[in-house]
Structure formats: C-alpha cells, structure tokens
Image 1: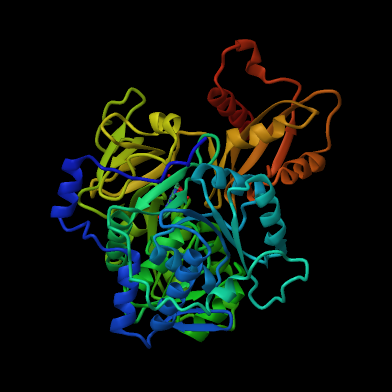
Image 2: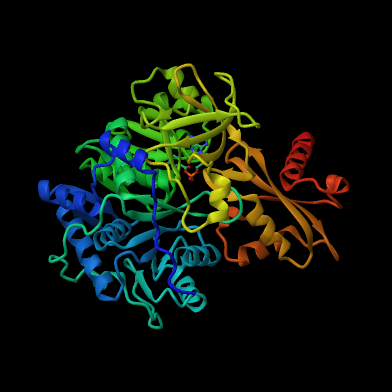
Length: 549
Ligand code: J2J
C-alpha cells in the first residue's frame, strides 16, 4: 500500500501571491510565535487549568520538551498524531509541542469513540495517539488498546494521566514523563508558513467526517484578525468551556487567538455553568465562546448565581443559529457584548463587530473576516440570487481550503472548478453586507452545534438485523436547536427503541450521534415513487413529523 500521502493545501499561484502581497500570509509559524511571546513576556501567565498555572516561558519549555520526546520516540516531521484530549493544559502543551517538532496534530473531539478515531487514524495515516486516561467517565486507555489492535500503524501512544495513578496493567507510557526531556536545543520552528500545520475535522454533511488541512499561513491569519475583531490583547482572559479541539473555541478567536494576542487561557473541563462561573470570578475572565444551548443555560443561571461575572466583556456565540429573542438577553443579563460567529472548520468565519448597532448584532451572523473572502449566494440552478434573497453559500479566500485531505470524491462534490467551497448553508445577505443563516441544504443535523451526518447514522442503523431501512432527519428542538429523529422500517419483528440506541452506541460512535427519537413505520410513503432520492425522502418524513406535532 505504501506510505499514506502527506497532507498539503495549495492555492493557485496568483491567489497565493495576492494573499502574501496583501500581508495576510506572513510566513509566520506556530512554533516561532510561541517562542517570540515567551521571549517578550516570559513570566506572564499563559495557561491556567486544574492545578496548573503556566507562564509563557513554562508553556514554551513544555512544548519543546514534548517535541523532543516525540521525536526521540521515532516520530518524524510531517507524521500525523491523533490528539484526543479534553480541556486540560496538556492539550495546549501537546499541540504546541507537535507544532514545534513539525508533527501534524489531528484533532478529535472528546465525544468521539473508536469508530470515529479509527476513521481519522486511517484517513490521516496517523502514527501516534495522545489521550487522557479518562474523562467524563470514559476510559480512553481502553480505546487506545482497541485502536492499536485495529490500526497497528499507530505505533506510539501516550496517555495523560493527570492526577490519576496509572493502572498497573496500563501498557502505555505517560505523557507526563516527556515533560522531563530537555528540548532546549530544538529550533523554535522547522516549518514554513505554507506547510500544513494540522488536520481539523469537518462537520461531515455527507457520510463520514473529512480531514481539513490548514496551513500555518492561513490559520495564523485568522488568529491575528480574530483577536483584533474580538478586541483581544495582553489583558484578555479567555475561558475555554466548549471542547477546545473544536475549531470555534480553538480559533474564533478561541484559545489560540488569546495566546496569539499575548493573553491568558483558562480551561474549564466541565460544561456545567457553575464551574464556569466560579472560574470567571476567580480568574477575571473577560471573554468566552458558547453554542446557543449553553448560552441559554448561562442566561438562566447567571441571575441566581453567587458568582460575580462582571469581568466578562464579550461572548462569542456560534456553531448553530442563535435566535434573536435569546440574543437580545445577552447584554442585560450577562453584562457582556454579544458577538455572533458563523464559521466553519473549512475556513470562512463571519463575526458581528463589537461596535455594530444592536440591530446587526441581534439579527445577523456577521460579516467575513477578510476583504478577500469571496462570497457567492446562488439559486438551485447556480445563478446569483437577487440582492437580499436567500441562496446557497459558496466561498473562497485566504483561509478557506481548496481541498480535503486525500479525498477526491468529496472534493469533486464540495468544490467548484474555480475553487469555491460549497458550504451547504443557505444564507441571505443584508444591505450592510452581513449574512443571515437561513438553514442548511444538506442532510445533516446541527444538534447544539454538534454536526451529525444523516447518512452516517442511517448506515449504523442498517447494520442492525431488525432494521430493513432507515432515514434520519432533523427536527426543530426548543433547547438543542435541532434534534435527530430516525424513521425505521423494521424487519422480522420490531426492536425496542432503547435496544436500537444501545446498538448504535455499541458501534463505538459519539453519544451526540445517537438518535434522540425513533419512529417505526411500515414503509416509506414514497417507496412507490421508486427512484426518490434520500434527500427528498428525508424532507418528506420531516414534513410529516412536523405536521403531527
Ligand atoms: C448558524 N449556523 C452556524 C451560526 C456555524 C466559528 C464558529 C462556528 C464554527 C463551526 C467554526 C453558525 N449560525 N452562527 O468552525 O470557527 C453551522 C453552519 C456551518 C457549520 C460549520 C468557527 N456557525 N454554523 O460550527 O465546522 O452550518 O464549525 O457550515 O463545526 O456550522 O460547522 P463546524
């Protein structure tokens, strides 16, 4: 089979030249800017989490120590490393260490399980896996064992044990031992700006998640601009509440934006509002990012909390559509400015600006970061819509990818011949040039910001012996925004819904993908129409369900 391909991301020359000339791409790298910050202000706090309080110098030292440990183990620059860590300081040390070594992190979410991890390992050709021993009641060491059995190419595994004592049978080296390495001889960076820095995970609108190669140049551009647009500086304290492996709390402006600006990152390992509120008070948090359902919890709990939240200045909300009614409550209840963020791991990110009129902040999802973000809004036939009308959003620009990693069929679907990315989102543009998200054209469920591919879950359902056919659709949900409903045609007796859910879970996938609701039907009304598309079928079933409610 040979060596798996190395990730690349290439823009046509004339675009690359333009992005460099405009000063967007500066051949800056992660390893280099961390070293610059650590030299400029070594004693300033960079990362706070659990018992740890690391200065910039300490973070830089730990990154170098890990980098030399990874390389000493036999990994080579360009190798891919699966990072499967919750919101703990080790997450940041590990990714900074990988950058320093020229290794390529592949970000998995803590909710992902063996099936997804194996898919990422295979797709990226990963040679190593770094996980926490356990988190939120799940044993990642067990997953590591299974991964190694299924994918022997993943030869190196490190487990961050945190405070927990290692189990006597645990065969894996502890990440912590690498912090004792001497990495002082390593250069700050061996990468170039145009190199792929990491692989991010797509929301997966059709089928399984795809891998998104982002370069130092393109991603650091978004960090620099996001930090500016969100008003971040040395005094900013960013709270990571959402899983920081996700592109939104990572970069919009996220923990990387905060570090880029020389600010401080505080990590909250639990999504519970009171844990976050306690940290806001203790650390003087000024900024955080939330998905709409979490914001809703905060709005309910803040007025009765004992904690003082007055340090909060801005809150970014995105990942899923925020309703105007909820948006309106942010400033009066939390005393902070709302910034709506409409972004995607593939690239394009839109923000409402801090000084925008309330009208725009409450009703729109913002405008692009870059003057060179090109936006097309097209009708079903691919023609530009009339101004103000809704249509399919396509985009290209200085930080939107031109291709997924090693995936020609997905690339053929997701990109036009002239390099526009088909986002799958339906939007309209206001006269001010701001975008309002209307919905999605594709069949995925946006469950509280977690993206679920209908096709992926249908395939899991079809593996059950008592499932003849299945169609998964999204249903509006007051709290989650959308929830998932599986329509199932049983065969040979009807399975119990709880058993079906257990079956899906046992396939080793993230819990958020397990259908919220299962409806048994005799047949799909449309099977008579023979060649009806899955898409049309799902639309029909969704309409049927909404009618009944
Ligand atoms: C409606 N839908 C939204 C919003 C994303 C910043 C913010 C979010 C993401 C993200 C991100 C939305 N209103 N405000 O990576 O850097 C839906 C759209 C979009 C998809 C992308 C970032 N914000 N969405 O959510 O890659 O459907 O990135 O195409 O996970 O989320 O999902 P994802």
